[in-house]
Length: 470
Ligand code: AMP
Ligand code: ZN
Image 1 (cartoon, helix red, strand yellow):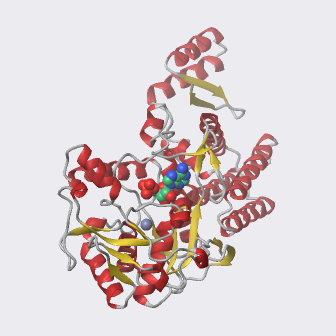
Image 2 (cartoon, helix red, strand yellow):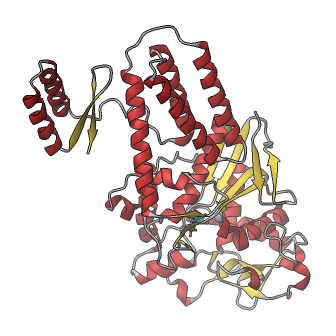
Image 3 (tube, helix red, strand yellow):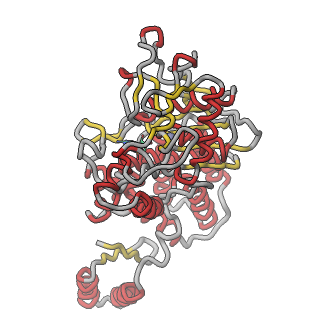
């Protein structure tokens, strides 16, 4: 089975063909570590996790690099405000970021290079761009990339270069499409940078944001690699500038597939730090949602569609996850023995194929979820009709475990085992015994006691019971 991705470069679906057979090398623009990441940022990282897990599901050996932007306009500005050294300041948010990744079950990348550890690599690229005439030093002693020297400039963001003014320069890391300009590769030190500076052949200063990603991707993945991802707002200028610098320096193609994730929005607007309309992951956890529920919400829409954040969606996620837990419990508790049915095996095989085909179709997660729901419905029906036996149930559980290597949501095994405290199980056991001896008054009293402890007990059709937190 093949995978197709929508390549932003060219704006069309293309079959994924890696540079080296069987290997997928991908670079994902990581966080700027000047604050706790918000759930909008995490939409991008959860999408990248889905991409990574899908590539592995299809058998690729994945090498993923996610950088940490620990020097740029924003980290310098805020570390100075806090009167902290840049390193001490960014260390707080680096650590928080890794904790958050765990909460959201995002699989670790192979490399997490920090920009401040790669200044020499950046200087080497800038030197090469100067030598080849793609860059120049301006009166302010900063080094700029001359976009007029690179005829392909604008190919990713589709900018019409004919009508651009030439020789205009911009020093800030972030700017809009209507201010296309020569961008800074190396920023000469000024008093706003405080203590932050490195020596270079062009005097003290610091790198521009864009050169950071070119240097770190090249170092760990080579001059041409397979996939580069980021949020859609990274496409311009960040990714456009990365292409220009890298392709000019190396005279070869930089990246084959560009994948961009649409925004998480709230009340019709992009969730962002600058607009102040954001929730950090930590805030969501304080509000009582867990990482699994938030992961569900962030994963539930196709990555190229805007995703509207609501608390109702978080409640929905909680409900769906509970339904899955109950469903797995039901399958685990099934006692009926018998021979696996060939018809049921075929149902599972078809579901497995459809799930994989959905993922291979540009990560069509809605379709993949639809396969899960419809299989769950079908199996519940068979359970209701007593048409399923232990061997079938085991095969079904195994398939859901397999799906969960990509989704990391279902927790097939945690759902049924080890989650109910021993005290609760003991009480539920007592209640069943009371019912079995027709002592309904005692049974009801124990039910109330369980309720006070925050648990509900339900009788299963096969004489067993299930405990659920209220
Ligand atoms: P930053 O830390 O600002 O560099 O952003 C880190 C990542 O989050 C980038 O890939 C951004 O494109 C992405 N991002 C920022 N805001 C959102 C949002 N509201 N929805 C989805 N992705 C976002
Ligand atoms: Zn980047």
